[in-house]
Length: 210
Image (tube, rainbow, N blue to C red; front, side, top):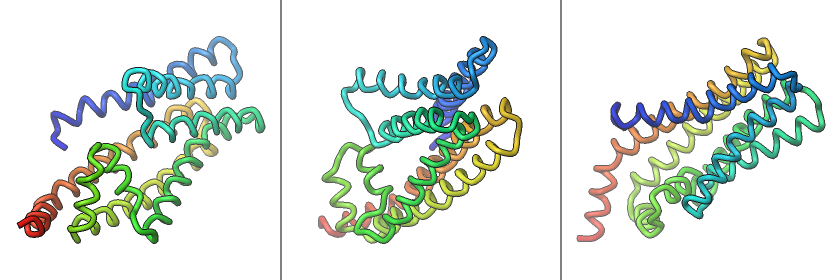
């Protein structure tokens, strides 16, 4: 990922996934809305984003499903607990669940990142060919999945600590910021690592085709 192409994406993520929900939370809090309800409504910003994306493209990605699960879990936790800090850790629970799913996938036929790459590339035949004929492609996907497992579990633990051991106004901003920064770092590393492995993968595929 080049610096020029990554900066706009970083700005968009920070604005939409961190800044906008936090602004909604602060506005509702100042109006006297309870912290739990304010956090649930702020989380609904992500839900609106998924809905807009579906209307525009008529598709729902795996990541969009995670956003919907996160919002639904937040509403459920808020209604059951009445504790704003419990609402904050909903994202950590979803993140930890994805991290554990990635860990389990390492022991299955295909690791989790293989399917995510396939969804983003949009060419299932190319992904299947690479998996079948390239040892480097298979190794890269397993290493990447292992890195995401470690990163997601570490991020989840950090956010839970921040949610319960810092003032609520700070935690409300810090928790999504930690999540967004962690995902951006993992994505940047994944793209760099995949780019570095690409020549070897291409060479293996070329040898098979020749």
